[in-house]
Image 1 (cartoon, rainbow, N blue to C red):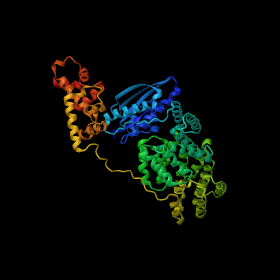
Image 2: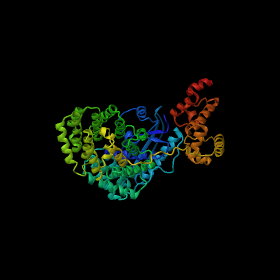
Image 3: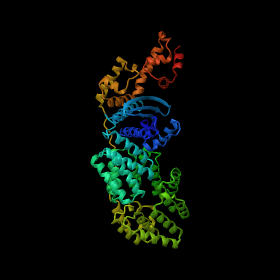
Image 4: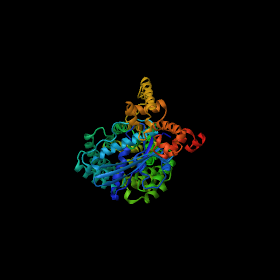
Length: 594
């Protein structure tokens, strides 16, 4: 397992007011976002980490499910203008808590606190697991208005529940935040995301919702054009309102370049490759999204969608069944599950599922269209004719995109190919973006063999320059000559000054003592000595302990006392590292000496 992997579990709300839970959730999310800025550190995304909220599951089991080597857990207490934050790092394999700290700070300095905590966590993690570079800051100030920030955190809390009622609550909170600070970029991005959700699920009038999403996306872009979330929203707008595959791709690509650890952007890029038939490229991005956010229902949806689009209908069906057990109101999962049943020639199950569908998630045109496809598959000509007639009536509405799509699929399955292409041409004039999805769907069946198909394919999915991350080897942080000079200087300083006897010694403080940048010292230790900072320093502490233990004049001092004299400040860390270093327990070592 890659040791540079970490999951940040939801910090516990230790405030007297349980309503402050949104705040502890928000602090957790900010720390996740901060650590995710570090290249080569794989940080599990919020959704997968929060899957374990309020669940009494052993740390080792959580780490195994998330494929991480380290777990960060903590708590937040907010009282008036003061906050207390505690955090501790745990090595998953051994369940050793190798670092912990508590901060008492004024809330008015919340961004400075988050930056301070995130930097310290990153430093302590690097000391324990190995080299990665850390910048001077990991958290940027979002706003000068603390109340606006709190409202935005509360809005995020509700938005992440992913249902219409809570998303409407989130919208109201984002709007209140913007009343206090009209330039709060994150609230504009949050509103754009919320209105996009309401538009795609059709729980608001589509045109109205997309207009609001576009308004807030453009405001966010004007405030910060280098925000990854802004480009993710621009990708959605390009796809769903402009029917532009190339613009959607361009913005998704920009979002990934700005924030490679952004699972939603990685999923979106996978989705764009899937619908254009570039399955190898799709899997590259989907695999990245799964490594960052393995338990997210949305990520699992895209995995199932990939399976559906590559012809593994039964496997896709199993995944969608599992998703619907967890959330019976998962509209996209229900829809593609229906498509998989149709491809498996099980129309009666489709009709049964439609009848059992919860009323509050029914999208009328989709219900009509899926029923029509089932009746076509059954060979029920009377009901097919009735449904085709109703779909044709609905498709006269230029914004009835679902009706356009299902009528197109119905024509394709009835082998009315001329009617299908005529409808397609007419619908594309009003930018019926749903065709970007349905045109290459397996349900189009025989249509793909028609000459016009390729013409429309290149119209919908123009040639793009495929994303290929730069894979060039980064040059070493230090040249061979400089490395030798620094290494000699480091080892001489260790021998002469014994800094390891200070239990509070850190990589950063040692770097200052020998006049090196911490990133350079971390690289030197890992690349030239082959040890992380803790292993390097604790080796000297173990050797010092051996010397003390072998001195008869120290016979009156306990093993733990000698460990503390050698620079250790934890009995567990001492015992664990001593056995790792020598193959013996400290007491067995003493017996061997005597």
